[in-house]
Length: 301
Image (cartoon, rainbow, N blue to C red; front, side, top):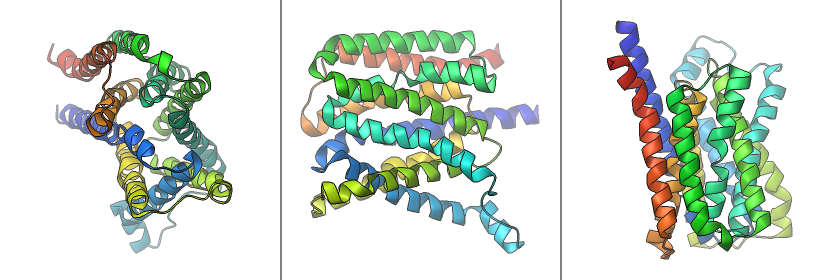
């Protein structure tokens, strides 16, 4: 019973971490639009700050301090590095494609097309990790799909095809990243996220010369927030949560992000979502609540 209680608390903590992560991620559409830079310098700058934040967090972690105190080798083995770099490419592609898509299509389009990711994650998690989604999770995925269709019925016509395709590709890459992180749950998933942010920063470097950004006080403050909190802290929360939560459920909780993204844009920029967007958001929230509550209800039953 004690172990079951510990497992239950771990699941709840994981769900909470991923929920907070999704809330931070949900501000991306707003802040990207407030920075008047080319998308690649935005992606690179925020990823560089996020990488520095995660590196500091990693070095200050209790396990890293214990390893240094005992004289043990910290970090990853040379054999792990190529695998982690490859896994990091998934998340790097997620961020780069998403930032570019945000500049080519409506913010709601970009975030909602990216969030076909729960379906891809459920299928990949089943095929690769043998984490077969439960019937309740399939039902929640169906509700998320219905919510997406409601949103699309009122919003996709405002976007561009190229931006929508890039956003969809970002969702596939996002699902691959979640599966890779979950596969490394016995290690340190933060290593993959650290790699991915470094890859993104390096990939964006030429664009600082091709499209030099104008470093105003406002843009630098916005980039600092995005780097440290919106993806730095969020990455740490996601890495902690994915160790405790099955990949299908984790991605369902992340579906809160597309619901909140238009809310922040509406509050700050006055872009009011249509009635189908509001209705679709309500369906998605209900699906996430259902998927999170079912494990506890099943145990009580």
